[in-house]
Length: 86
Image 1 (cartoon, rainbow, N blue to C red):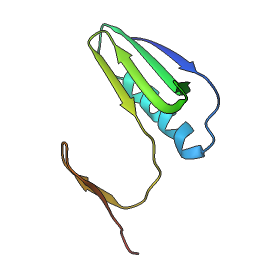
Image 2: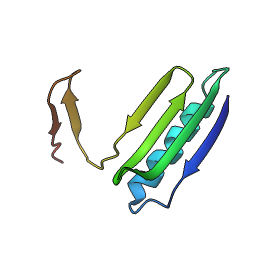
Image 3: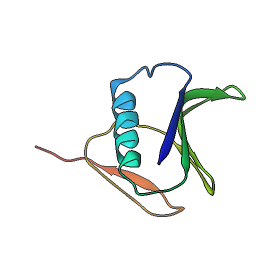
């Protein structure tokens, strides 16, 4: 798969940079024949977007957050962080 990365500026938080590298590694491992454009940390109409993955038949916008614990939720529903205690 051919991947292009467009990154407007470096991420402010380490977890965002780590997430980008993890995404790029996982996408490279896919057996897709088509092209993939990854746009990172950019502004559009004054709003910041963390990640956007663009393929010929799909566009995925990703908002990156840092949390520990389990996240529960469903399609079109509420999402809840379940704290884990040590």
